[in-house]
Image (tube, rainbow, N blue to C red; front, top):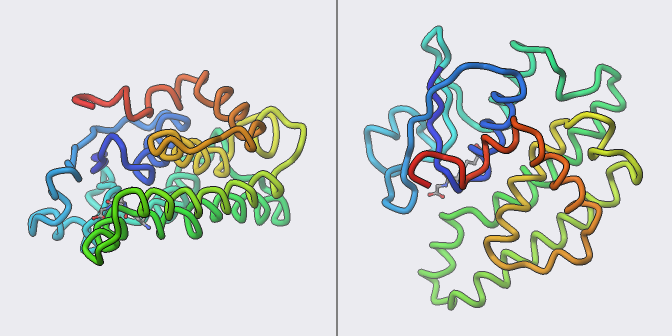
Length: 208
Ligand SMILES: N[C@@H](CCC(=O)N[C@@H](CS)C(=O)NCC(=O)O)C(=O)O
């Protein structure tokens, strides 16, 4: 399997974690977003949305959109599960994950930051913008998860943790104050102590 990935991409980071949790062998194909490699026509043939991740399965099918890829991974490699079997519990985990995936990440994406800069906003204002949406999302996420479990929803990492940890990486990258989100930092530390998360970290990618 080939995963088109970029070390600092939080969406690719999600997929790297899930592939590691499920112990699915894969090769990483780097797409250097800092060099605009996602805009190369050759890459647009892989992902018309011109973004990472994209996963080419062993059967040669190309999957895009991290949440769709994660759903495919869960359906294809059910053990260990990253979603509860119970539909209500599952909806709760998915809702928390989607705070990161649908509410926070899209408005802070590289192309949005570039557009804000092109519209004349200084870097400081762009960083304020990102931190604003992360504060909103982390506050909601912290309320939606269980208050007292080792991970967001239980004794093992779920889709919610898989979406949380990369977003916290982004928060640190932009020097956001995480003091109000102590529970999230604790969960992050527990996740990063696991080899599946550790190997997926941006700083552990080749050439990072
Ligand atoms: N909704 C998509 C977003 C993918 C995405 O935009 N990834 C970012 C990296 S985290 C990217 O490649 N951005 C390129 C750009 O904005 O030009 C997903 O979840 O896969």
